[in-house]
Length: 572
Image 1 (tube, rainbow, N blue to C red):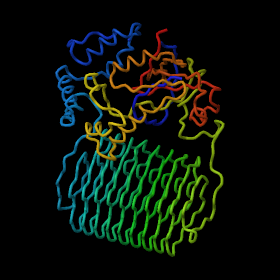
Image 2 (image 1 turned 45 degrees about the vertical axis):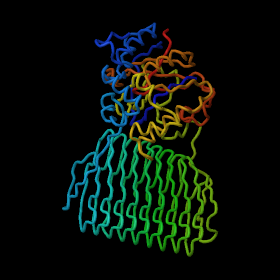
Image 3 (image 1 turned 120 degrees about the vertical axis):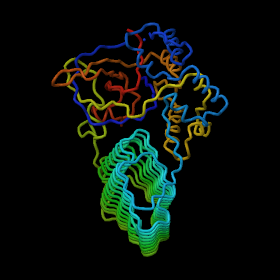
Image 4 (image 1 turned 90 degrees about the horizontal axis):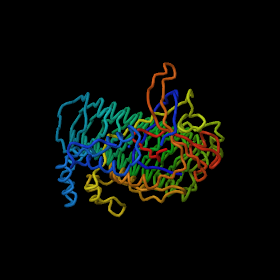
């Protein structure tokens, strides 16, 4: 089995019907650049030297990913890299080299003493906005909407305010790679409310951090509706000290993370030391794929609080949840889980220190599923109304998990002229980017032991989206290969050529196919399909077997490659 790795975040969108016009089993040079000293010209020479047999048109794609740096710029940035000075020129470097980087935002000290309605607003760093303000009302509509690489920051927003109301509508909707920071939002504020609606809906790779949100607030309410609805594969959301030390603060999460794919949420010190808190989670993590929710010190040492979880993880697919020190050492707390974990495929839940040391508490579970672990929890005051021993399982290719899209995997026999087939959206959702020349990439650190250095180069702060992307890439690079797999991480196009030409003995078949509109028969795309002939080393739970209804080693499995992926094959 042969696998190639290109570090992309992929998002499968609504399915298309396509008509296969014809296929052929497939097996590149470049013309010289006018300036022979550019990285692009160097790649041209390398390709023409290393690739002996060429198919017309096979080289244009790789050439489009070549570094756009000029000869002078390439030499200048290589010198900066050798001197460890690239961080000082990061914006210029990212722009000139066509790299994926987050913008550096300077602080914005706009105060706006009067009420403001922002209809369209993008990429800002608000500092001291609404601090010590009385009776204000601000609204944000279409904030950073439909963006590509989005980063926003709110610091000390409405801190020490009184009666301030904020409304965010359409925040970051349909954006791509997103990083949001709300630090000290509404801290020590009295009255007022924060209302988030349609927050990061349809976002790819979302990350949001709320720190000290309404910490020490008095009677201030927060509401999140349609939060990360239909979002994809993000490092997640974190709420730290949300409502901590608060008094009489009602918080509501409605439709949180519903229909999302591989999303993580962390709640730390949520409502800790609070008085008469009222928290409601409705439609939380429902219909999601592999959700991970972590609650730590939630409601700990609180007094007379009420927490309600309704439809928690309803119809979700597997996933992992943990509740640590929930309502620990609290007084007269009431916690209710209704319809918890009624999943499509049961996941795992861990409750540790649940209600321990509490006085006068009432904790009840209704319709709670299997795969749970309760450790060191209160022996009194906890009631299980109905403990479900069976989940909504799938198998045999009959009741297919909805997260394994029809058409994502198929059999080789379907690759013939005239076949009507469902096809997932193979568009690459990540920003456009290019390879770096060897003269620069060879001077950049890229290993777990040097992650601090690479973070410094790309201005990746701790727990940021960029740190997560870097860490994920390095971890995948250093992962040991699976049985039958040869893998290597490459940083330049030349390195890719070297690796690909050294390992072309794969047990796969590669097809090219024209895709036609099923009605008009007009060509709409030309795509590449890969058929893995040996699946014996694949896991039994692989989505291909869930979809096609077989087991490892018994069938071949085919799939389309995504935009900006590359396939290499021996000329035949």
